[in-house]
Image 1 (cartoon, rainbow, N blue to C red):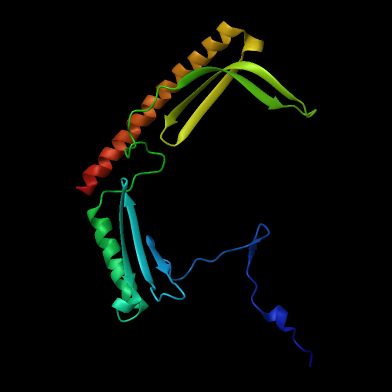
Image 2: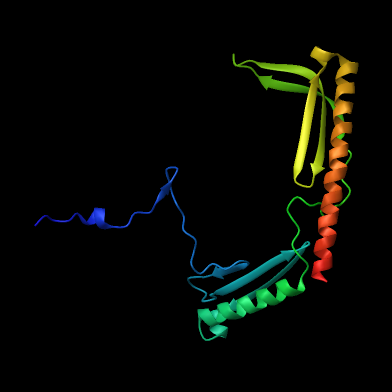
Length: 188
């Protein structure tokens, strides 16, 4: 009978795009982290929830409960209670803790731009540059070369672009405010 090569029999970790796939920890729970230390013996669960710039956290040590699973049950109870009482989470990119805080009208500057060409040399040119935040999570920018368009025309084109983007900005921030108000009404 042929000998079976044991290395082929072992289960392999599946690879995605040449990297090993990381499997999720079976003990992982949202907002709860396991804290294990070697020497101090302060092993337990750490609950951390952030809502509207306010951090609520608490440790649940194993030695205060029967075992690590009892500590986890208490941590889950605490987490659920805090999530029930706290307002809904805000999306990232919100300024001043509110998703509908007044956005800036955008900026328009005359700048010297530098770039590296294919030949390896660095070149400079002057341009009008404009940027604006059209939604809490999205920025837009444009630039118009003074060498190609002239000072007046390049500035006018940047100003026209900003006017168009301000209209989009008003619509997006109005929608954000409406969504936030609906979330607040549901929470109360």
